[in-house]
Image (tube, rainbow, N blue to C red; front, side):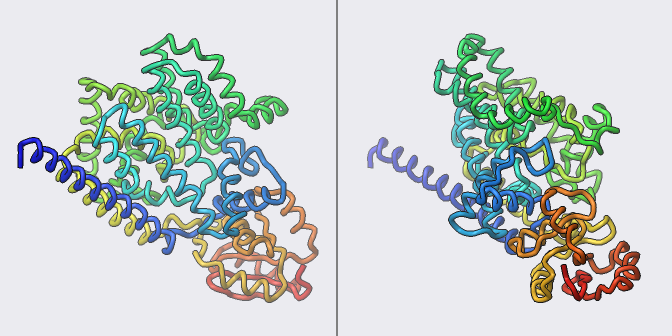
Length: 490
């Protein structure tokens, strides 16, 4: 065998090793999500059920620009779910397939960005690492929250096209960039966490590209058209939405919380909801400091090609803290938009097959451990009126109510919309507190004797019991729920 043949054979073997490694990691990411969907971790909650109800109503011709009764999230994922429902029928799994596929597309986009920043094989490693780590992200990408997956995909598209436009002018790229920017703003203004740094970086590195601004603006208008039209009719009230609960938090507090609570929770060093340190406070802080030091060194050295990623990472905390929605720290949900650049920066250190294999194996094991800890605590399950958690299985309750003909129900928010979606609206339920869908609320409240549903052990149920029994309702305990059904139903 000649030297050239030996070299060619070595290259083929190395390529085979990389292919095997990347395929195995991708399959592991898919297996983790199948496990989640089949377990208690895959329990639908009412926020997700709203997306399913919007999708089902879209098939009946009812279109909403925003997630029902909100100004901070668009309806694109609900429309995508409607397409899935049209083919496969509506179900919890069919609903959750939408964010899983969109996040998968975001991983592909991460690879494309990586090819222009960290190069191969780091781009591929970063993309598959995004599929298997950290544990919260693996779980979160199975949650149909309405707009996170679409917003991430749009933000990454803007970054990728900014990288392309840095190299040469393209009217098509400028138009698609504008469309992705507008479509992302409609989906969620969180997409700007990726899009704004990309545009600022492009302006600094190739100002001449902004000759194509008219083309990009036209694309933006097309992408954001429903959002723009709604705002034009409603005083532009969706341009700067804010969280009522977050208005008492300060910019400085949210900035500090990012580093002390949210970032370590995203990295898996703290558990979401309980915020317990997984390996103890001292070890967790040391690992967090190591990660931040690595980012700091990279910012100082600025290796070739990494500038766009580092620019995004450096600006992220300042943009992040500007939103009052980030007052909420027990879920690191907003860091989903930082994950692709951060993962690519980490993957840059894993360009040898042995190092990549070790890191991916450790990441998968860590995610399994983290998911088990999250499941064990059970704090991801919504609480009814903050005193008891909603049981994950609503099937027995639905069967019972249908047998009794109880098709109009008043319940806690975290019960009501799940009940409507999972019963395929054979049962129409509305919330006793915050109402997401007014037509259903009116329908239920017009009923003379709407049934009432509580979680077993709920304080509100004990307080309402005497009055409901006095009014002729009968009390039933079904699958962890308490149902009050009047003989006349309603």
